[in-house]
Image (cartoon, rainbow, N blue to C red):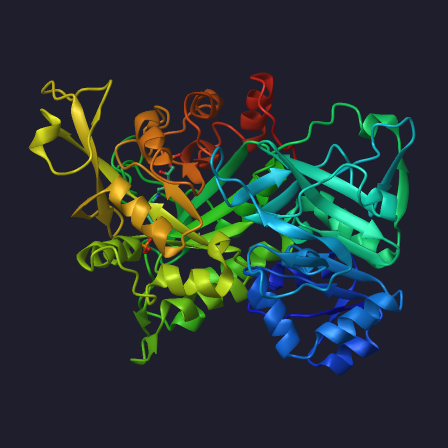
Length: 549
Ligand code: 1PR
């Protein structure tokens, strides 16, 4: 197999990139020293997290000069995400640390006054020349394709400026901001998106770069119907646990109770809806924009390094090229031999096995309690902070499991209430959302707004907003809860719990400003496919990404 050199200079999820490179027929040779860069023919510089941290690490390792020389020598170079940003002069994220300066402008933060930041999801990489009669694309990028982005900083696009210097540019638009999604000149290719997480469209970009296939003319039908912008993100969630026979299965509860209690099988057994790896692949091929695994029991009886979820991630990431999130048990832990394993190390094992994000549940509630008890001071030691600092905030999701608590009037509780359109059977029409831990088994004296604000301050990048009352109900999302949480924070929110039909997805995108929506039971029971949800959203006028075969 031909090879490509890969520079893994910060801890990151490199596994999915390696899988993607293998998938398109190349082997990876690791760059361990500056000397390896000098010997490289094709070089890929991936990057996640903080610009300043990445660039200083490269500098400290003595890599910057060899990279510069590699580029100047005209050898193929590809930068991904912060690897692309490294090509610029510098970044607002850390103005003390210079970039390589190959592109004479600076990276800036997205404006978060009117939209969620980070920008997470599937957006365009649309060649800026694509309106002309003959459309020339670079490295297999197509105006009709969508690519997976996750970042808070980007290079703003100024029409014509870089093109006049010989650069080919493809852009994406987020809110009112148009920014550089991909760029190329001569031997250089950079993508702000993650091609390794962008399905077949991303694999095509990697393959084109590795094969040296820089320019292609596109037929008009590949350009027709193009629409720049972020698509509505649809996520498939798999709750995974061991059943009574000891097998790892995808299950699904009603209000978090996963045992059969009625119908033909009223056995009280754990519901078995299928095998995790097979189901993840099925949803990927139906067009799921992300797949989330929640380990809803923590397999405490085996060493952490042998946790079955690690194997599930390894196998899934070989064939599923969209972001994978793993939740359940992300916290400081004591291993079976008594060794203390910090949450960061637990997360690292998952990242190395193919996860792109970890989802913190119960531990986030405990950390938020400590945060308020300390007068809203950060300790720097929580799972959220340590993982976010090491891997970037985009890698940390907080999964929230709230439950409605009804009261007669707001003064009856010190928690934030809302007036609901759905009073309870006693006629109470105010409610607050109480946080729970341990899969909803224990309630805490904290409301959902307190929790999301605290975890945003700690560096969480996204909220997975479940609702125990709605879980498994097929009655639609809790729109009141979603709007209430969205109003409290800037980071993206994934609406979860209650989806029963495709119209529920259209409803949540119409009536709330949620950034993404997640379904579980309706997909697992085979009632609807992800494709049907996307088709419905498209009919309703929403921009979606369809699976590219
Ligand atoms: O506390 O960090 O170990 O994390 C445990 C994780 O497992 C949390 O994310 C928690 O939400 C989840 N969890 C724990 N117990 C259950 C359970 O069901 N017994 N599942 C559970 C949570 C909720 C959603 C579900 C949606 C959509 N599952 O993920 O998929 O409600 O369902 P629907 O579309 O069918 O209505 P920690």
